[in-house]
Length: 110
Image (tube, rainbow, N blue to C red; front, side, top):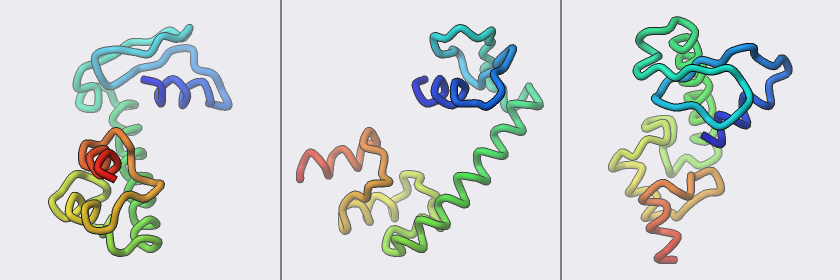
């Protein structure tokens, strides 16, 4: 919710209405509506999902160049066995999400 709020508030052009893929919207002053499975029902949410995935994949390819041992280009940061094993073997980078269970476990054991 916080990331979504920051993303919308950081737009150069403030929206008149926000549509969200999910079942709730952040607490903000914008007119907004949440749609469960919105990426399957609302064209602009679908487009946003595609853009987000392509951007994430590009970011993962860049991280793979910087940290080849983690194989980000293969799993795109998802919690595959390969990714979890790499976290156990090599530790956590500044790019890992601290709330991700396997990352949190390594940090707590650390």
